[in-house]
Length: 153
Image 1 (cartoon, rainbow, N blue to C red):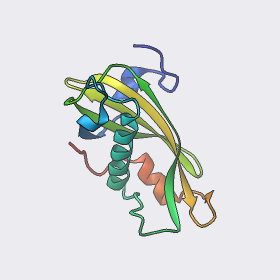
Image 2 (cartoon, rainbow, N blue to C red):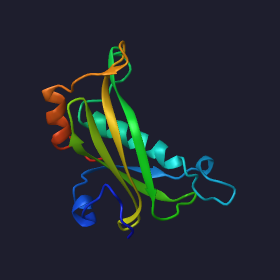
Image 3 (cartoon, one colour):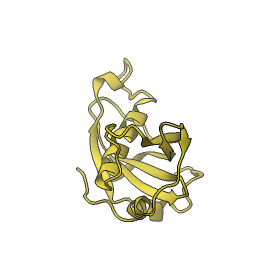
Image 4 (cartoon, rainbow, N blue to C red):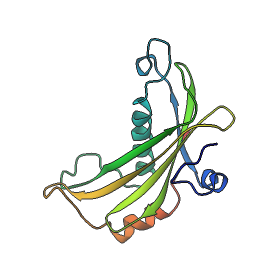
């Protein structure tokens, strides 16, 4: 496997994932050859990220317009092709927690743990009225560093 800058040891990195959701590659997410469009993984990451944050009790359902968690950056490494009809598991974990932001990592697998995509992103906790970051609470940090409440399939 090619070297990926945010992964030091692939085996131990992959073993740390406990949470995942299953996603089917839809026709609308492919090109005329049935090959998955390169922007589609970002939709899967969003879906998995929301489910993961919900499992931790951290997802803002948009009823609270004063604060929220937003994506600051997101990158994806494409390791193998995906096609219409493929079913994948999108794994999510917290990798690092800072003062007002945290890194999440993603691993997308197909079949018997065939890794097809890896990704990472930085999320920031914000004061929506000011449009600026705000410190994560100790409770939020504990949840992010703990284990997800349930495993999705």
